[in-house]
Image (cartoon, rainbow over all chains, first blue to last red; front, side):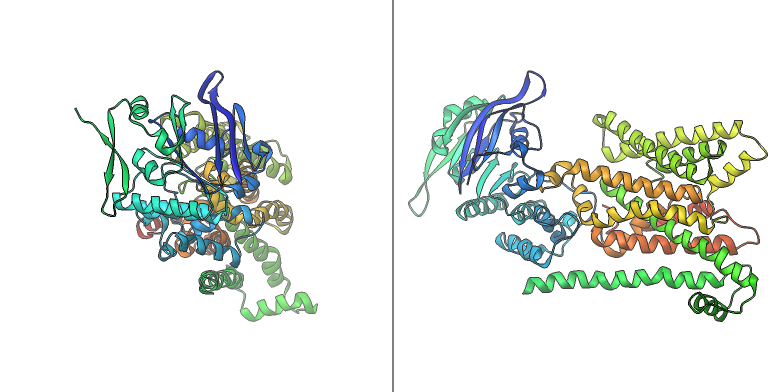
Length: 261
Length: 346
């Protein structure tokens, strides 16, 4: 399994690209963190990769196959999308929401089978949220809702998970819990592309990182090489120092410390 | 194993409800057959109905006419139209992701009403009324959606669709008034006026034969696709990322729902509020999942309109127009539902 993006660009209007010339490669079980200031084009990039927006130029390949001619159903079996937090207008139960992830596996004119329940339940167990099954989706907390959306994407049984700022709107504890879920899912063999506003989160997840600025890739590579004081200053316009902190077990952790004047 | 229990507990609970709700309109229909200005005893009713299979029933011609030519067509029409409006309302609420829309509010009823008025004034006959109602109903929903998209950037899409529907509805009702003002006051005007109030008093068997096929064409795809309707309520992009061709699905749903509304309008005139209130009521019974919501809406909607129509024909010595009664009952009932159901609407 691999995802390859070749010089992808998207534009609402001709010659005014939101992003252009984006190329990257994601291998099985790899995490790619996408960093960039607000409006850098992260969400638009994700939606173009998912085929929700039509690419202006460039291609997306899954397993060496150009996906531009794939049906929605075929795409959904390859890539799962975890959107930013949202609320639907109707009070569905959590199990109903997770089951919707089974759409690509359910026959056109039928509803989920017992087997689909099984998959949905496993996805929820994987994230330790089975206890939410009968709760009302619109009445649970933002952190729980984020996990439900991930469970829904897992129920889709995709090979690639694309997550749009999964840690936004979460409290400190839930952010870290979510990141450890992400790492575990990658260890299980899922490829993950996620956007984040916290360079520390990218460092925590390891793998690769990409920095976007004004719709173009500023730099990409191993997280350690991408997240540098120089690069952070370039994309966010603030001074940041990266320190090596030694934690109790003796391991060294890189952390970003903004320098406040 | 534990999961299997979860799944079957989940579907079993709803299955019982659904069976109960299917029986409800049938029982009500039997009761309604006996009620009316000319009372029919259960014994005579049994004789008449079993007579269909046994041949002779030795009942008087009057009783036979009352049962077979007057009440049966009317009762079937009431149940069908109640079902059609409710399913169409529930489907519109899902595709537009908006619990406040219904065939009335989106302007579909007004558009279909205008189409039917044109057909009446031109004496196009009942098939002409049906086709014209459908074409203008579809035009109305398209206009509402178009206006909604046009001014979307200035606010919340939920409210804007309601606003667009009110605009479109107003335009079509004004056009109907315009036609009425120039219509022949002895023949066409009373026909249009009475028809706009909504009534089932003149429904005959031949009207049913004409309206049942388009209703089936509208209702069967919606029932088959009903689980997928859930995905539309999460918005196009999410639904697409889960593997739904949303453009195709939405088009099918809108055409089917409009067909249901228009075929109802073509035989009964304008009957308001059913399409808005019943889906909410059904949601309060069974939750928002379209898998059970659509069948429950059908059963509740059919029963509701049958009850109201029976009241309309028996309460006073004169017949109360059905559309007026559904509005009088529907509006306060809707307020009650909104203030009492936690699960109804978020």
